[in-house]
Length: 172
Image 1 (spheres, helix red, strand yellow):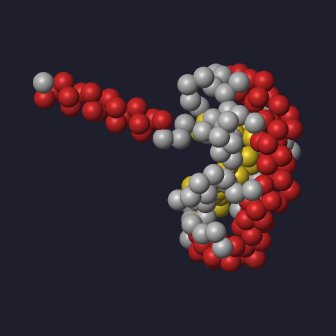
Image 2 (image 1 turned 45 degrees about the vertical axis):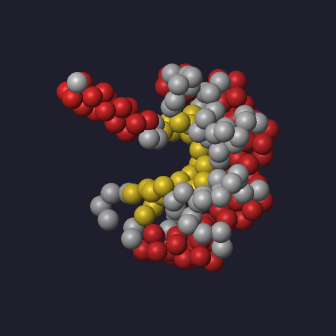
């Protein structure tokens, strides 16, 4: 592969660590070098416990090491997406995920400079956030030591809204 490719691995498509490791191995065979990996239970409710998700990250890291690939694991937590805004839990998860082998920590939904600053100061791996209404400017995020920003599905949703509006005007 000529260019590094990272994918959204969601929750790994399995609750079973052996299947999770097999899924990662298949991706690595395709040349994938990075993943986003969520702590939200996909097709379920809530998030995995801190210890369970750390174990899942460890399973992914070990699978990558067996293949000799320095996989970038961007561990995503959904603490701030419809689950409150507990900075303490976010810090606990970030530290545990880093210790388990995560390369970066993605905290979509966090909004305030105070919360962002506390998280970047307390988590030992690069932190990234999602740009959404209420998030500080990119310049302010850089000052808060945010390593990466994501726009997620927001540009797609805006484009679809615009297309829908324009199509509606043409029909009227």
